[in-house]
Image 1 (cartoon, rainbow, N blue to C red):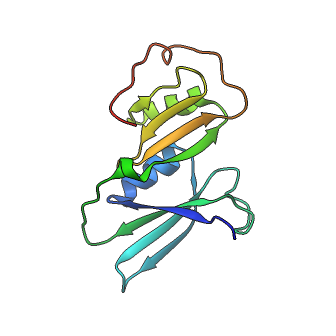
Image 2: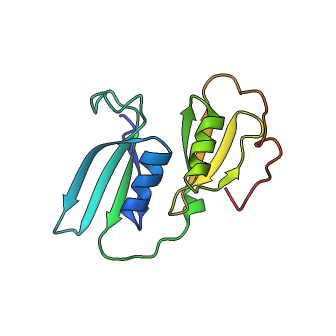
Amino acid sequence: MRYLHTMVRVTDLDASLHFYCDLLGLSEVRRMENEEGRYTLVFLAAPKDADRSAAERSPEVELTFNWDPETYSGGRNFGHLAYKVDDIYAACARLQAGGVTINRPPRDGRMAFVRSPDGISIELLQEGEPLAPAEPWVSMANTGSW
């Protein structure tokens, strides 16, 4: 048995791809459109996995976009997706510059939380040892829920 992916339903595919790919840094590795079922599936991989074969990749995120509008709730009930990043401060600065709220800033140089456009909680963890505490993150309060 091998863990393959986590599926997240999204309401705006373009906004979600902007968040997950342009801001968070994931790469689209495949896409499936189903006319009969009226949905699009987009599979995303972490940058270090994007060039590997499907059998060699770490688990992916599957964005499911249903063409007919639906209201989804319970983003917090889902839990969260977690990614290790090379520089948590740079990752948070890039997300913040893209208009993303840093819900739990990386005050400790180790962990932060943000939310996707659909309210999915994303945990960012510093690769290796925590970075030395630095401003503006040390003084930044939590915002909203994470």
